[in-house]
Image 1 (cartoon, rainbow, N blue to C red):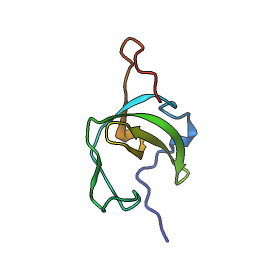
Image 2: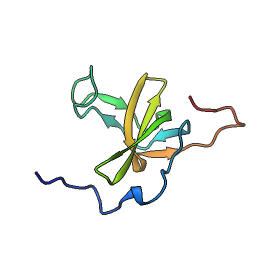
Image 3: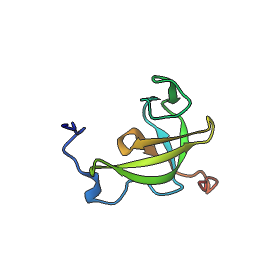
Length: 98
């Protein structure tokens, strides 16, 4: 079985872009690809602009970091690549993460 990679970039050659507890915002709408339990394939899990916190950092295909992001407002924890997220700065230190 041949696995198609998204790009030739290997993120794992450097440190993760985001940290545990960091507040992030989704750059895209994410739909269930069949790996999210209790939802139908194609259901929207995260909308572009939704905010959440990094709760885990894993890897995928020995190429990418995958960030487990807890989107508190909708109650979902979704795995996302760095290019699907943007970091947010805390406002007056009010956002401390999970």
